[in-house]
Amino acid sequence: MNHKFSDSNHIGLVSTFSDLVNTSFLGTVNAICWHRNLAGDFKEIVSKLQLEQNITEVTPETLLALKLSEKGHIAREVILSDLHLLADFGASPSLNLIKSYQRDEELDFISTDVYSYHVDRSPIAADTFLCTYYGAASDILPNDQVEQKILIPQIREKLKELHEGPEAEFETFLSEHYFDLHYQPKPYAKTINLGLGHLWRLAVDHPGQKVLPCVHRAPVENDGEYRLLLIC
Image (cartoon, rainbow, N blue to C red):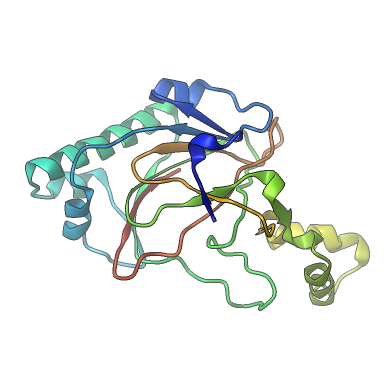
């Protein structure tokens, strides 16, 4: 079930890049959205880019080399501006043309790919920034609407069977294989879609974090349609 992000009490809405990067996460708020209605033809850009792998990084030089209409030019300027703003802030943004991510099909009882609801973890203070310009957009869920998969009894038992070391090392095993980062939506969970054109900042699990990390997932791609995603 989808839910409007403007109604959620764990999302902060801002109207400038400065507010996006300077507004503190607080209480239940662990996602901040620079809400925008972008002009420009992002579909034209996607149609003129070459997919080299399932995920292809698009450089500013590649963008600048495209011959575009006026609306395509407007879209390109938006993307270049976003890349510039984030780089000046000290982030390392990447623009990706995405056909699909790799699926984790190794275990039938738990998935650890990006299509599964998960949180990001960092050893240092950092946030995740993302913006979908074209194609299917990412989803997030409030933390009180998910359950950590490793705490679900049936999954935990199977993970214990998979773990061949001492009981004392089980938690380390879960962390080393990223099982502890993944979450299952509760039956009443209301998915919040991040939409197109909005630049988001999501809380990450790191030692200095004062709020819960934001639970999110990559969407299943629309048939025959690539995604154009900025992420860092």
